[in-house]
Length: 262
Image (cartoon, rainbow, N blue to C red; front, top):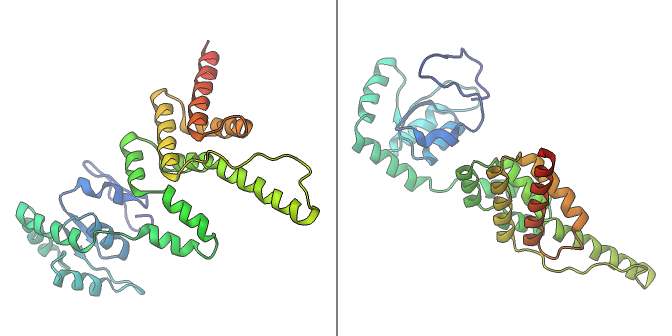
């Protein structure tokens, strides 16, 4: 992991990870051997990976107590000696033994509360209304779709933000109208009205559809999202719906790309 400071053991049939999100690959494995740190333990259990844990001495983290508790719950194996590791590996080679550990782990840790934790951290800095909308926009199943389609999560998040432009645009105009009415008694200019703002579910689907089309046509996602931002800003009052905006932006981008190729 990114906090590791020891020797790197590189070689044949080894993949050395330094990224924080190795968890994305856990379900590719039949079982694991791991230290007993907080993140590693609960990520492995959440993924249902039968694991042999070896506790390491840490000043502020009692790995031994954590792993001992989980072992007593039948959720993992515990070792602190080299010879014992091979005995434990022999146990996990058995399909039925692994299945038992996997079943118990998934029953105990069926939810990781990542979204709830993020919302709790952000609640002092973001309004309840914005948090509620973000929760509706950022459904976990959509991130699973990004992986299946080969779409980057950061590109997906940026596209969602850009697609939510119409709501932010018209809310800003409504606030400006309220300001002029309050302090001047009238509106000295004509504003657009709040109309045809997509539901959060539709915005997520449209973001995925736009990025998928970029991928299929060999267009860099970041380039496509930047183009959409510019296109939407220029056409916010001309095009009524986000769906129409997405498809017109994509068609315009394709035409421009084809013209540049010629």
